[in-house]
Length: 244
Image (cartoon, rainbow, N blue to C red):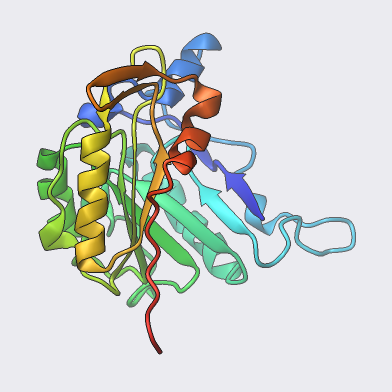
């Protein structure tokens, strides 16, 4: 089971992958200004309780954290320590965070972080080679217990080989861009990343085709509701089975 926890909303575009951000698209439809970071009414969701004093989110849930912003965005620096406190309190939940701001990881980091909280997974997104070569050298050295690389929206072929440390990178996922203005995602790029993961013995997940998907020289327009299912149908996910 899983739940979404968008504790703050809004972000600033910082790299090519942000150009057609889905949050900006959705906010525009409702007249919101996406570049303004605001705390949401769900800020304290993980520690909210029911009438019987039990937590509203039961133990064991996966909590998708801050998916309408960036957990490390500058505008949330003053709230992040409180967020970390809630994450620490709910050690019975797994918090999954995706960020483009690994270079801001240490801002407002808890004093007791050490090598990382066991219940926190932090994924670094990369959309092209330039961002991979900037973010991943930083990311791979950070004290995080559970590390994943997300190649999305994938805008070109990316060579990840020097960053794929099996046992330290738990998974690589890749996917195209959604929306009417989506840029092309070439299936060859997906397959190449998969091959790199196979060679490095790192799990791989093809999570989304994107809206404009190029395969065998043919460009497909794929509706949003089919982008995940079509990726699953490709049958190229790679799982690692290690002997104990």
